Length: 112
Image (cartoon, rainbow, N blue to C red):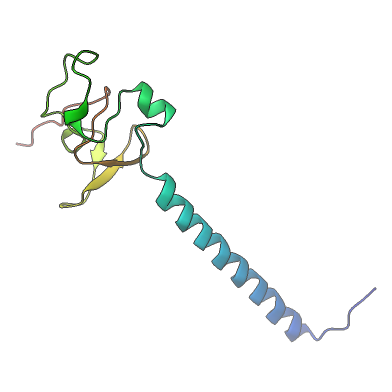
């Protein structure tokens, strides 16, 4: 079966279809990323790394070398904009809070 649709109507139809699909995909991705980007203490891998949202809540018996000065914002693997309460962790490849901690903490080198 062949449809005799003028070419300009086909172009309009295809354009609307592509734009609509793009908007839906972008909205879905934005919604999904806002829910999944943050590291959670209950996630399996962060849990195995001793991750805590707040460095004050780290198990002192299990991690005796931990100090309160060790926090995500002081780690080499952390990056954020000044004043942000969260930042990106290159180890987890997700968002972590400034006061978080995991056993992979690497002290940021002092700048001269």
